[in-house]
Length: 168
Image (cartoon, rainbow, N blue to C red; front, side, top):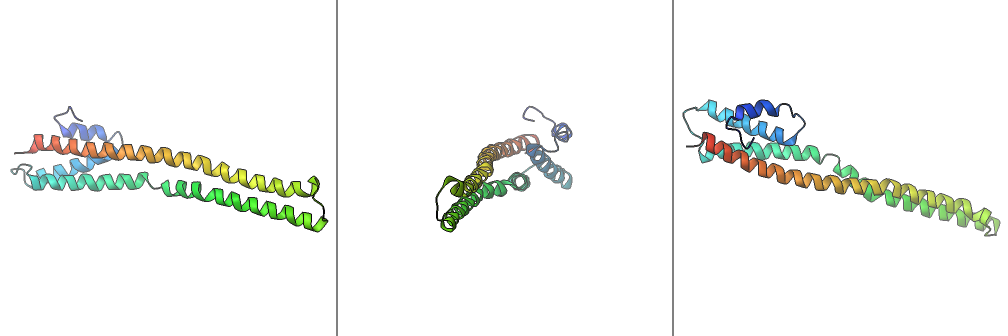
């Protein structure tokens, strides 16, 4: 992209990367650039027309970011709620253990162990769901932030190249 003087060729090549946010960003900017060029071929790419291309790039970037962030709230919710579900199970298991002690009026291992086991299983289940969700959330958040920076840089490069190729 950066080394090409023919954005039409870059556009053809970008179609191979349908799922790529950067390819989508390029295609949106290129589409707007072609529209402006065809609507008034004699008029060079002035600042106001360049701003129109910039708006198309921003809109495409926002759409791509929305797609990337789609499942982030699920991961965040899973990571923050499941420990509380595990805690609820822990409290429930301890309550069961105390009820059994109260009914039998004895605190032997055979009386307490089932409730404590339920409590530990609930705690483990909550952590089993929460830990991977938090790790995945942080991993994808970092990747999305990096991609946002790449898209911003790409947009600036696209505008610069468009200005050089189509400007006055």
